[in-house]
Length: 193
Image 1 (spheres, rainbow, N blue to C red):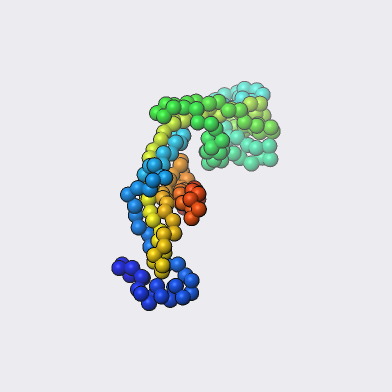
Image 2 (cartoon, rainbow, N blue to C red):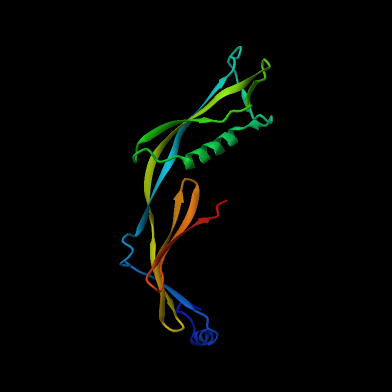
């Protein structure tokens, strides 16, 4: 293979061994793909507030730590991960450009709030998270392509592909036309660091 295409000897050998040599050409349009982009709607986190109710009030205001019923400290990173999981399960209720706030009650069975100075601990009676997000949309471009088998000049398929990002995740979307005329769409997660 070179920039000018497959060598004739390579095409002959590929044909002999029943191997396809595909050429990919970009296209300006495909009649069944009515767009050159995919519109992605997502929620962007604006703010979170944690509301923790305990069985008694602390004697004074100060920094506290939250612990699970097993005694594991619940870190800020763990709370941030919980927020991401909650947001993925939420319905998109805001219009584009608007902020929307939801209050969600989480299980707090056996959780404790501990304060070291002075040493006090309280059981959590209610754990609420207030999540404010903004609905946004963006256009992710598609590349329209034609796949042709160079060994016999047969059209294999036409389709489109593009990389899309939703929040922190990246995906590859592929749309192809099957030989029988059916269309298929596939979305595959792309590995990120």
